[in-house]
Length: 283
Ligand SMILES: NC(=O)c1ccc[n+]([C@@H]2O[C@H](COP(=O)([O-])OP(=O)(O)OC[C@H]3O[C@@H](n4cnc5c(N)ncnc54)[C@H](OP(=O)(O)O)[C@@H]3O)[C@@H](O)[C@H]2O)c1
Image (cartoon, rainbow, N blue to C red; front, side):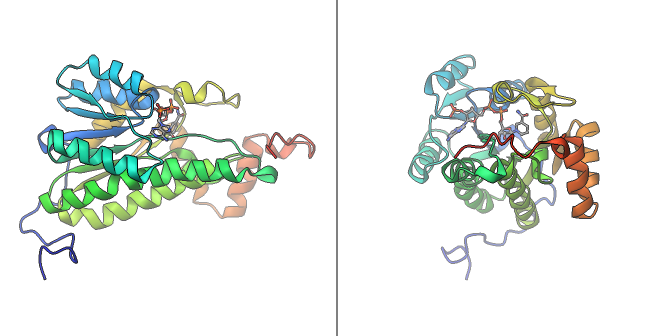
């Protein structure tokens, strides 16, 4: 059976084995575009010849950003946490601009949660936006890309996804799942001619970091992060991790036995000196 609904990813002849993000593939659908890394990505992408469909909830910020690039960037406000909103957003972009060439799943939230006082609503929100939001964006586009035999998908995870960190149970779990998700996409979509990139940033100076008072070693600017991500996608890289002096040691200690990893992280973050009564968790 070929080309039927039962076989959504039909076999194609002579597809390239190795894909780079390419403006010629079609419009980029970028989520989390209203500020931070997403807004910086928009600038970096337009500078390299891409046309953009920008998604986030803050319609005013999206429209202001799109107005900087007339004819090259368009606002498509939506909540990545909603099945209906994301399906409608995808349909609207498709109708106006044709097939999506590149997906960047960047929308994300951080919710600090003390392990002894986990707020279930905040936990669900974090997974719903960070992980399921990416799935809502990628699922319809991956199907269409497979039929065309071209396209690129970039998943924005975090170095927190490499291993557990204090107060990061929900955020870290969502970002670890995104690493696994991107690996699955890479394994399965490569033979269909679709490129996959996984961005694993360390600390990036964005509004998301303004309320965090913990140390942020080797923090890079949002513009620097965006440049590294876009250049990595255009070079056809799978894993784009930066700054390496932060992410490589972290990945290396995670390769140690888990008990050693846990001890080292507890010591490194000062959590070994934490008095039992200082819980900052919500109840
Ligand atoms: N900053 C860092 O140190 C760092 C490090 C590693 C990874 N990351 C990841 O990089 C990505 C961007 O982070 P950032 O630092 O730029 O954060 P940010 O400044 O807080 O921006 C987050 C973006 O996500 C959007 N967003 C949040 N919830 C959304 C929802 N329900 N629906 C649609 N859009 C939503 C926000 O727009 P609206 O509020 O307008 O919806 C905003 O545009 C995130 O996935 C984050 O986890 C950040």
